[in-house]
Amino acid sequence: MNQLIREKRKVAFNFKRITSTTITALSEVIDMEVHALTASGTPYYLMYSVDANGDTSFESASSVIFKDTEVVGNHIINKVAMRFYTLDNSKSIEIQIVHSVKNENAENFIMVSGEDSTWVNGILNRLTALVKGAEGQLKVNTFYKGLFILSLMLAFNIEFFRLGSKTFFRVGNETIAALLIFVGPAISFILAFKLGNYIDSLWPAIELQTGPQHFSSTIKKRNTMKWVMASIIVPIVLSVLYDVFKNLQLFL
Image (cartoon, rainbow, N blue to C red; front, side, top):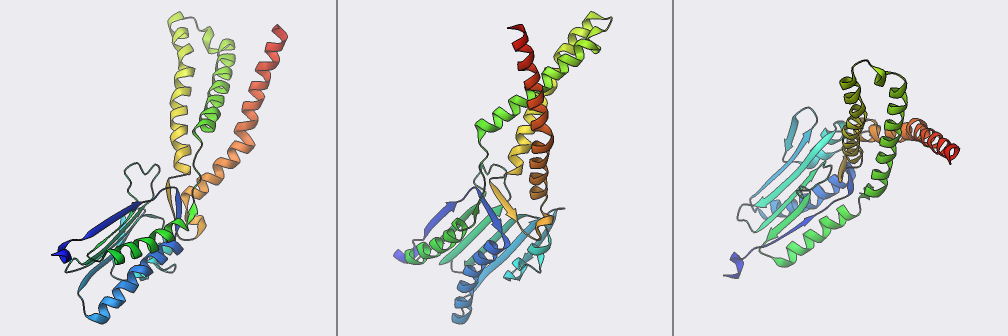
């Protein structure tokens, strides 16, 4: 009767950068189990799958799909799935890795089940150790992100009203002029919301880094964002705020 009871354990993970090295290492743990079952003649099911950009998917019963010279090494990958189980359901391993901005639904997980509790815990510990050993992902600090976006909003609105007071606020129609006064703040709020989401997307909760580094659009965007912030945005914001404080001192 005890043999009919299966133990199932699931571990979700977050804030990691998963490379092809980690993916290959995870598949090797499953391959070792498959090799042992093949030697004993135990029937099993095994499927590795990869979802790439451009609505392209690949499947294989061999971990060769994860080698650098094959699919993972030559495509921007959005999702990796590994599914293994014996046909008598005595052993089962499932791994899912999804490129996720927030990973709110715990899409990234390792799940192991089986009749042998020692086997379940041993396999799960080996797999989770590999994920824990992967590079950690930077967590975007909400306070500093909000402070940065607020500074941009202030600088944008200051320049908008400064320019508007000399030009388009002075239209003949008072109704249009009044409406234009609300345009700047409205635009700044919309842009602030979009910018917040964009910053989050640059440091996703789970980042799949596969193939040559120049393939990764996330890395490109992150480097571009850093350059734009350091070279353009921050100097402009500081300049505008400096002018504001300088003018305030003149009135005091």
